[in-house]
Image 1 (tube, rainbow, N blue to C red):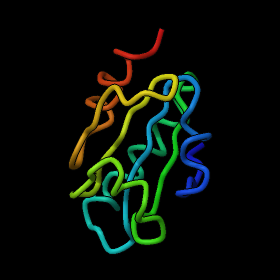
Image 2: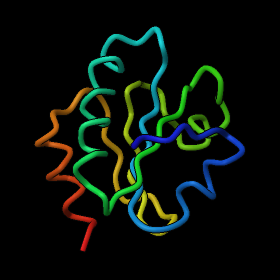
Image 3: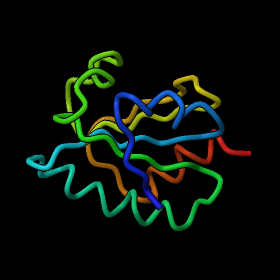
Image 4: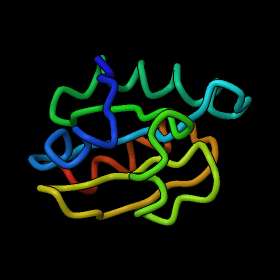
Length: 103
């Protein structure tokens, strides 16, 4: 399952374990392509927490991480950013990236 996160809840939502946050917007075509991939991965990888954040409704968090392009996928482990993936990526590509950070 992919949970919605906001500027107010982002830090607590991504504080523990491996998390992937999908920064997106409703008007973004590549974001609409990336979302189903993230949703599918969320059903397969129960050792990763999946979140999504609408950058239009929550501008502070993307700005604090210098996110200029969407989709951007921010990967954190125990609250620390370990990877940033910009642009559309396939399920296989994302799984390979996430596998580096999971035990």
